[in-house]
Amino acid sequence: MSDKFDVIIIGAGPAGYVAAIRAAQLGLKTACVDAFTGKDGKQALGGTCLNVGCIPSKALLDSSRQYWNIAHNLPAHGISVDNPKVDMATFIGRKDKIVKQFTGGIGQLFKANKVTPYFGTGKLLKGNSVEVTAADGSKQTISATNVILASGSIPIELPFAKFDGKTIVDNAGALDFTAVPKRLGVIGAGVIGLELGSVWRRMGAEVTIIEALPDFLSVADADIAKIAAKEFAKQGLDIKLDAKLNKAEVKKDGVHLTYTDKSGEQKLVVDKLLVAVGRRAYTKDLLADDTGVKLDERGRILVDEHCHTGVDGVWAIGDAVRGPMLAHKGSEEGVAVAEWIAGKAGHVNYDTIPFVIYTEPEVAWAGKTEKELKDAGIPYRVGTFPFAAIGRAVAMNEAVGQVKMLAHAETDRILGVHMVGPGVSELIAECVVAMEFKGSSEDLARIVHAHPTLSEAVHEAALSVDKRAIHKGN
Ligand SMILES: Cc1cc2nc3c(=O)[nH]c(=O)nc-3n(C[C@H](O)[C@H](O)[C@H](O)COP(=O)(O)OP(=O)(O)OC[C@H]3O[C@@H](n4cnc5c(N)ncnc54)[C@H](O)[C@@H]3O)c2cc1C
Image 1 (cartoon, rainbow, N blue to C red):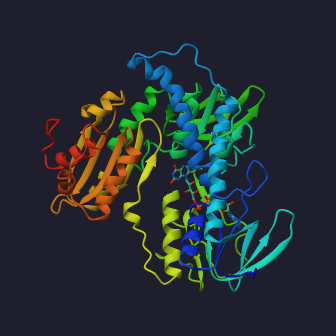
Image 2: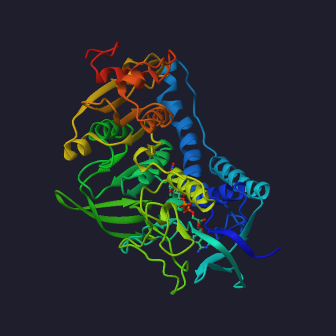
Image 3: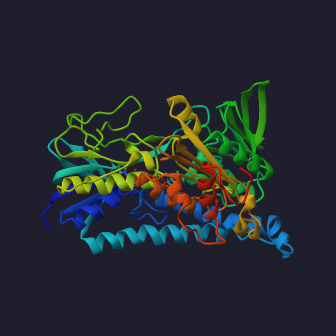
C-alpha cells in the first residue's frame, strides 16, 4: 500500500477518530496515527475519552450509583439488602471490559471504513509529511495533502503535588484504585474532581475536595450550582472553597496536605490524592520546528474559526485547540474539518454545545447563564420548574433540582437552559435542538411532552417563562 494519503490525522481520540471516519466516508484516502497504549500493551484507539475519560468514568459512576442506592434509595422503596459487598476486581474489571469493547470498536470501524491506523508518535514535518515513531524507536514517514492535528490534552500537574501513579494520581490513577481509599483528597472541584470524587464517596471513602476558587462551579448558572452544592454536601462530599493547596507530602500514614483558606493554614491527611486542576493541550513531539504551525499563549494549537492553522492543508481540532474540552465538541470539529477538506459545508455551532456533569443529581446546561446575560445587558425572562413537582421524578424518589430556562425578553428566543436533577444529561438535548433551530420558549411550551416523564420539567419551565406553568404557582 502506498503511504501517500489524502488525509492523515494525528490522534485517535473522539476528535481524531471521528474526523478519520468522516474523511473516509467522503472517499478520502485516510490514515490515523495514535500512540495510546492500553493496559495490554497494545494500541488502544479512542484517546483520553475512551481509555481514561468519559467512558470509564461513566462506567464507575454507574457501578457506584448502584451501590450507593442500596443504602440511600432502595429503603424508600421498601427494599432492603443486608451486608452488601463489593468485589473490587469485578468493579474495576467491568469498567476495563467496557473500555476494551469501545477501543476495539474503533479499530473495527477503521477497518470497515478503510482508515489505515498507525501505532506510534506522529510528528508533523514541513510539507505535510508525518514521521511516525513506533515504541521500538523505528521510524517511517507518510505524507498527505491534508493533516489534521488531534493530539488532545493531558492533566495539569502541580509542582508541589507531582503524580506518582499510586498515591498522588491523575484521572487515570483514580479510575484504577484497587481498594476504596478510606480518605480521598481531591484538588479541584471541576467536572473531573466532582465525578471521580462522587464515585469514591459512594463507595464509602471520606472525600475532601479542595478548590481554589471562591465560588462553587462558577462555569455553571449560579442558581443551579447552589442547588448542586447543597445536594453534594448532603452526600458527604466535603467541598472546601477558596482553599489553595500549598504542599502535599507522601508519608507512611498518607499524603499530608497543607492548604490555605480564609481562616489561615490548614492541614489534612488523606490516603490518596487526586489532582484534578484542569487539563492542557498536548503538543509534545508533535511539530517539527519549521512547520509554521503556531501555539497560543496557553500552549494550544492556534486555529481560526474553521480549525485551520494558517499553514496550507494543516488543521487542528479537539482539546488541542481553543474551546471547551469536551468529546462531542472535538468530534463535531472532526466532522466539520473532514467536510471542509472534501469541499462540503462543515458546521460547528459553538453557542449550543451542551455541558454535562454526571454526578447525582446530574448537572447540564447549554447557552448563556443568567449572569452572562446580565453582564451583556441582554433583556431576558426566566422560567423555572422544580423536579419536586414532576410525578415521574417523585415516583423514582429522585425529585431534586430544577430546570431553569432563559429567553430573550422581546423575541422569546431561548438563550440558555440550565438544569440540575435526575436524567438532565438526556433532557438537555431537547433544549439544544430548540436552540439550534432558534426556537422560543413558546415553541417548547406548545410541544406535547409525554406524561409522566422527566421531560415535563422542560415543558413546564418553558411555560413558566411566560408565567403560565400549570403545576406550580407563577
Ligand atoms: C476523567 C475524565 C472524564 C471525562 N468525561 C467527559 C464526558 O463525560 N464528556 C465529555 O464530553 N468529555 C469528557 N472528558 C473530556 C474528554 O475526554 C476530552 O474532551 C476528549 O477526549 C478530547 O478528545 P481529543 O480527541 O481532542 O483528545 P484525546 O481524547 O486526548 O485524544 C488524543 C489522542 O492523541 C494521541 N496523541 C497525542 N499526541 C500524539 C502524537 N504526537 N502522535 C500520536 N498520537 C498522539 C493521544 O495518545 C490520544 O490517544 C473527560 C475527561 C476526563 C479526563
